[in-house]
Length: 149
Image (tube, rainbow, N blue to C red; front, side, top):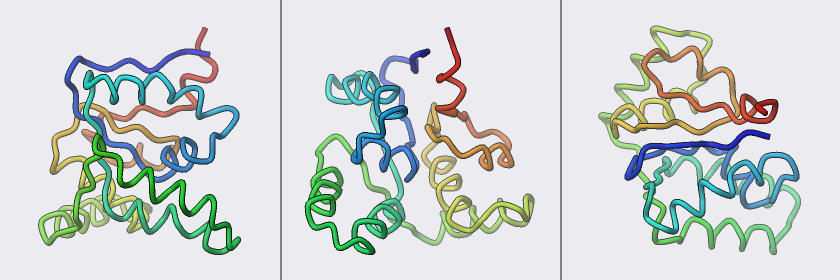
């Protein structure tokens, strides 16, 4: 397995999928993200995500009535090192432009990408190859690091 790298002090955007991998401790992807979260705690990298991630992440635990997992997600979103970015009109307009340019991009993904672009992030951490539809997004696909030496 390879490891993620980032510039010192970088602002990274993490999408919902990566948050779920982290909180649910996915056996393949959580270890890939461990060094990232250690760097966040050490203030070597800053991390942000859209408030949309809160909604998307809570759906699974709510469907399964898994109150313990729901609590883990809520704790994750209260972490002081995590910047939760509200969805405002500027982000919605940017998301609309992204959808117009890449009609196969789903609305939630357009919101995530637009949020990252508005923030001018250095990294966009995901495992969703659909984000390749967005130009000028500093994409880091976790699967690219699974097969790295």
